[in-house]
Length: 639
Ligand code: HEM
View 1 (cartoon, rainbow, N blue to C red):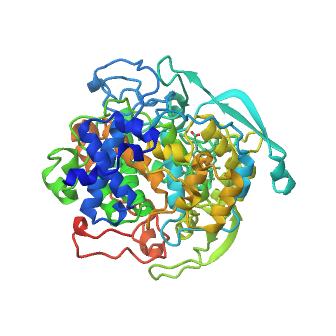
View 2: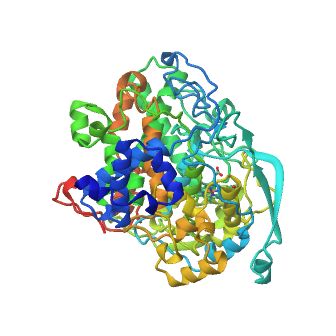
View 3: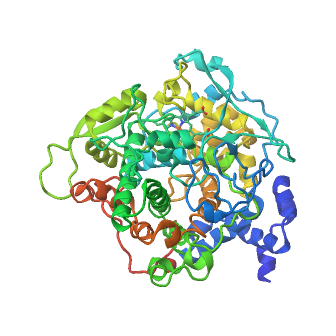
């Protein structure tokens, strides 16, 4: 009877694309799909008590792991003796025990779904028109106290660890649409950029793919680089340490390029976080040297990199994401990814017992790739297009005027236009500002919201930097370019994307949003054709779940990929042990729970003086998150 109720959506009520996916499912998975689909029809899962919400998410993740992981390209590497590589290599090789090159730099992006099957032309509708009519910021909108500029910078810090598409040498020039030119709005009549490099995969059904120039593993490559050359640039070759200048910020070379693992499209905020984690790496080196005096430079570096990368992954999992998706269910879910349902106290006392559900992915006996070699995916890149998090100006705070009392909000000193904080100009500015003032300022400023008409206007005339950190000669309209990129890379448009993610598609604009102005504007750009809606626009227009800073559609990609980054990695599973990390190194990871602690380690007293908030990622003068006497799993849903 129960089964019948859950299966009450007949196959014919499903879109043909969804029907095709469901037809491939096993009998059990079909039952699970129908349970999930029934909940989706009523938009039920965010309202469920935490333990039921977690059950829904477990079902969804299981189905995505089965049907939304597509390998791109042949597996070309070989097996090797893992005991000879008990450290993270410069280019990310030697992590997957079955294939040495999996996840290393310059390997293929995977996919979460087949390439788009729609026949819309690359310029339909014109990307500059979409950007002008639906994305460009009219007035700045933020998330209130939920998410600050450290949070937006943090995710760029992660992006520069994980993903970047290799470009072709061939340039494309896009003329601004007539309609946009007529408004007198665009700064340039056209803009130029490099095509994404498309490579034959030599396999079927995905015949061409694109390459990730960064290592796809969570290995801190934003501070360590993506190859031997990058790593050599940042290492001091003494006591395992990385280069840092006396003022606690990154060193610069003779061209004013910061000495960092990654310098492409950087800005002062990103440099600040890179500096903080170089300091963290160096502090780990000091601690290791004290405890293991016979370790040489290489050993100290290798262990410190493992520890620092794990600290970043942990902060992202149980601190940043919890603030991004501020609901009880996601608090429980993210902590379960690291500690398991039994929780931290149990894991600290008894170790990793009973597999990933009870004790989390971290410390699992074996890495798990669900039958598909690990990579990050095209769709993952697309849902992380979050430039709307950036404001128009950086609000600098006056930390000198502070008295000695606890938790103050420093007065505003100056508003600096964001373009002045980019590239070499931004590096000079950062040195003048100093790391402490910059951190306190970012902490007190709310970041932008991911919603329509909130894309930074200055990014529509942006001078990008190349992989060497040098300015490129041609400015780009980044908003329009992002629309173009998703189309160029065959990422399905919004509705096809949702169907492939086993989500209910929209039939009309009112299914996407209640905002009448948005409905009218969408109609003007796309007519009545909801299939044409670009993914980026859909993600920004979609009505959000209460507490979520991102759309549900983007979240379901996170659900699968966030777990995968941990469970597919040998250094978070088989090798997350004393032997590989050292006893003291593992203790360092286990004891560090938040960015607030790392900030306090390197800026002693900063949290007490400036941070009222519980997390370093919410606006620092906000009230701490209130506790609850109800056990987490029994708490009610959030909507
Ligand atoms: C001042 C800060 C930033 C600047 C100057 C910047 C600039 C750029 C530029 C020029 C590109 C390349 C566009 C292309 O050729 O396709 C890019 C790509 C991208 N950016 Fe940013 N960005 C910034 C911050 C952020 C933030 C906060 C995020 C948040 C997640 C982000 C996420 C991405 C992603 C996902 C890509 C696509 C990477 C790829 O194609 O592989 N960026 N950014």
